[in-house]
Image (cartoon, rainbow, N blue to C red; front, side, top):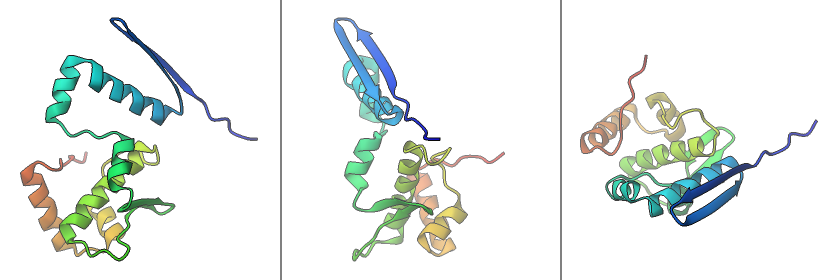
Length: 144
């Protein structure tokens, strides 16, 4: 039995603006977010101080460095030499892209998953992650 792809249809009216989006849910969600950020003043102001990239923007920015494989998100170094910090950051981006593609239930990734995906030294992962936490580049989720 073939599974049929369901399209999502969204219509937005804001003042004189009227727009409709239709297609795969993740594409429609990205389009709606982009529309809201561009046309709703408060959301636009908030977008100036936050970094919440859409799936398309993440792929455009990092598509040469990350790939989503059947085993999960991976940093794709090729011939490039990357620092542990850059490798860790790219692995986090890959996890976010994996989530945005609806291939994971959360954008979070555990230290063990990072170690497995990157083959980085656990002490290096811990040190770089601490630096990123202090700078506010990442957030730590508390496990229950």
